[in-house]
Image (tube, rainbow, N blue to C red; front, side, top):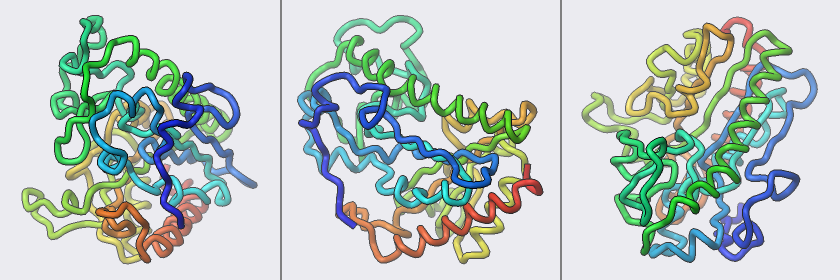
Length: 303
């Protein structure tokens, strides 16, 4: 498997991302055959880094890539074969993070004053990880200059808003057919985060985040947990990741829409220093294909 390169000079970086065809800010694949009421999403595996970002950055491409959920989109790429629709973000999360509120911005990053609605005071912004990230990796500052609000608005309107329009439409279409819909939002976590002593465990391979039971039916979490544990993976719930903006925003079980976040330990499939898949990638992909099949088969027991 080849390692994707950052394309800082690609056409996508020379103009605002378009919303159609190959230049859309996301890739969407509909379920094949008999569809199940699931939508898989990978919001952080995008690897397009437009020129406007790279021109303003003081980090090199290798450092910026540390924030990617590298290759997660490829791990779940065959979900449509099992009857599960799939949406993946094309643009890097360091450019625009679609797993944040649209205007969750950090005033300290901007030369001009942000509108009141964009001055977020969240823990994510405080950590430098708002809609437009200030840092990557272990607190490395991305930019060598202040941005202006027009730059942020351009990224949000061109990438964030179209991504969420498409995701919302997919979920609504799915609910219209099945009477319910379930989003699984796929992520990866540094191996160092998988076994923090504060959580009283030696490590885990997957973390299931259901907002402590508020974002999806308990049967869905149990089904995913049972299947993964049956394959030999160590599974934790809600710690250290309980689910981000997407899980919280879309997870409305009382309205027939469920959301579950799955964090994969990068050490299972990735050389984290070189950002290259290891021999574990093939096994993990095979197992996630098996999980997709199980979800499509047993969803009536879970939702």
